[in-house]
Length: 263
Ligand SMILES: *[C@@H]1O[C@H](CO)[C@@H](O)[C@H](O)[C@H]1NC(C)=O
Ligand SMILES: *[C@@H]1O[C@H](CO)[C@@H](O)[C@H](O)[C@H]1NC(C)=O
Ligand SMILES: *[C@@H]1O[C@H](CO)[C@@H](O)[C@H](O)[C@H]1NC(C)=O
Ligand SMILES: *[C@@H]1O[C@H](CO)[C@@H](O)[C@H](O)[C@H]1NC(C)=O
Ligand SMILES: *[C@@H]1O[C@H](CO)[C@@H](O)[C@H](O)[C@H]1NC(C)=O
Ligand SMILES: *[C@@H]1O[C@H](CO)[C@@H](O)[C@H](O)[C@H]1NC(C)=O
Ligand SMILES: *[C@@H]1O[C@H](CO)[C@@H](O)[C@H](O)[C@H]1NC(C)=O
Ligand SMILES: *[C@@H]1O[C@H](CO)[C@@H](O)[C@H](O)[C@H]1NC(C)=O
Image (cartoon, rainbow, N blue to C red; front, side, top):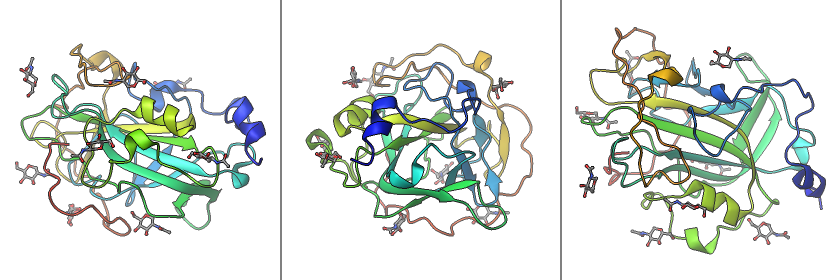
């Protein structure tokens, strides 16, 4: 019974004035919508939502957190999804959505120590599909990578039958909206996103680039982008900066080889 009151009302944050800014959580016009920003750090690089990241920056899974906790957060179990709606290219995303991460059984707790988020997320079990680093084809414009936080319906997650085949080695043509509905996920509670390309138009491999403004997005659409209103991500054409990605590779285990689908 522990989540019933939360489920009935949606996921509430203690402060009504907190973080109502959809443009900082998801790509322009994207669905499902989320108004609260999920905080993310790749090593020492804190993500600014919408920024273009060099190909090496998101090489391993980010640390995630929240600025403020939903009410009764200790009694709930949380769930993470990450998708790429732009594979193999934003203009013709025939493989989308690519499932980049499917992590049940996440706990939210108060952060501690220098550099920690106010509230931090930590998985209590193995992922269903482990974090897979962005690998957009070098011939593609930047892809969008979107991480959503959801509330799990209860403490024992069951994969919906229609999605039982998804795993580290089967990630294409995922439908996040459909999955969330079948799984009974509540939310999204929070989200964040970035863009990554693997070509010389973007930031250097270990650098971060500017936030891509919504007005820069062009109008290419994709029938495979599930519930997303897909728009072509702009390609960063400015000079690459030299911000270091810091020490990466501390925590994540990447699914092994054979992941050359252009993700
Ligand atoms: C929402 O986010 C956008 C993009 O970062 C920013 O320009 C705008 O000022 C923000 N609005 C509010 C009310 O915080
Ligand atoms: C999109 O990709 C599919 C599969 O590769 C291909 O058959 C189709 O011609 C492409 N469409 C466009 C408009 O490029
Ligand atoms: C959490 O996820 C990481 C990365 O996939 C994994 O190595 C670790 O075993 C998971 N933790 C638990 C408690 O299963
Ligand atoms: C990026 O592209 C280069 C070729 O230009 C390739 O060698 C490298 O493996 C690619 N990196 C990723 C993460 O896909
Ligand atoms: C818990 O949630 C799962 C979906 O992940 C559902 O299949 C199951 O019936 C739920 N269990 C209870 C006791 O509500
Ligand atoms: C991937 O998973 C889906 C959903 O369970 C399934 O329909 C499909 O056959 C699987 N594909 C492969 C290659 O395993
Ligand atoms: C760039 O990123 C790669 C992959 O994470 C790492 O091995 C390398 O040390 C980084 N280089 C610098 C200069 O930070
Ligand atoms: C994804 O699922 C939703 C909800 O079931 C459905 O409306 C939509 O058409 C699906 N998208 C694709 C590309 O199959």
